[in-house]
Image (tube, rainbow, N blue to C red; front, side, top):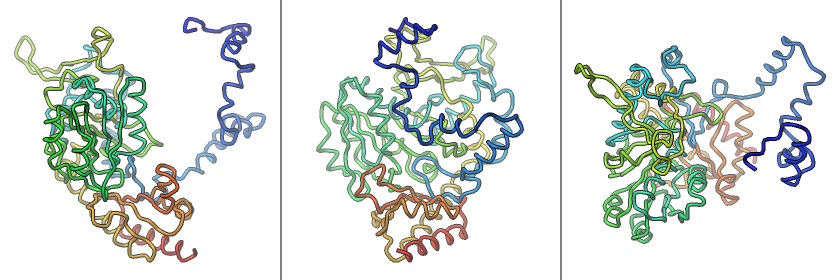
Length: 453
């Protein structure tokens, strides 16, 4: 079947017959008609000249309420942070803005140096020995880290914290499907991982435990004693961390993690309909030949001058296929450089102030929201960073629509992700760019919404 590529109508009919279909349109039957591409095209009518068509599409796009028009109080993996204006100007230079994938040895010294500096910045931020040159996104980076643990330990059981984003956990399940790896979820207790519960599930068949900081629910987990527990059992400790928070929180390296991953969107990348974003992967030095992707290194040429090289390229294109660590064939170099530029422009002090601003704004928002009758924080005794879950006696989806109609993207309704018992719960976020006036208005609208119930 793989060698059969249909060209003629007869061959297309033969292909459809092989897969049990009658018409090409049957291939799209699983997609709903409402909102599909075909219905959108049908709405265009007979056709338009270019100027009329552009005007029509502009009006169509105006229906979208993006972050430049709405006030964003939502996070859940994609955050509305300040991005220095110089970031776009610098990565728009021809040296960086290219479709060329910089894994070939002949990549320029300037590009290799930028990748090297990115690796250095991310390693320091995570408190780890090394970083690769980025991966597709945070979810796939974590899935790759779990694969490293499975290969390193030759074990086939993995425990994921309930504190991981549910969509990230889904990606891990997808990656490991078919590999005979058993995946378990360790429930949180009051928004945190219990060392006693982890001790119960640890064993000589456990490849790794994966924790999250902060958790999907915004709480700050306490990993005290977990690295020692896991290492004594011969298992690896993996932490999936939001890099923006590491300017204030303990780093994965300080917690004793073997591998740490994260989503790099919060480091200078705009909200962009879900991506493309940036996968971060850091590790202890002993795993340098296990992690996927590539690493840029600093060395000296034959005349003793410093120069940059691609030190490791763990891909089937460069080495024997059975020795490859991953089938990853590209990375997010432009976005990695954007993150590097933003980090350099902010500096350590600027990143700390941004993180502090997020922390204090979120706590002010939580204080004000829970002051509204009928609204409560579901983890009132657990520290949180810049996200938190509130519960109210009203469907969170109704509140979300009410706020959106008034220009505010409120907390994320959690029932679609976690089940109907979460109907009245939503995940709220406030970053450093939110203002007191915006917080006042959001709280006032929540009060108005509940007063109408």
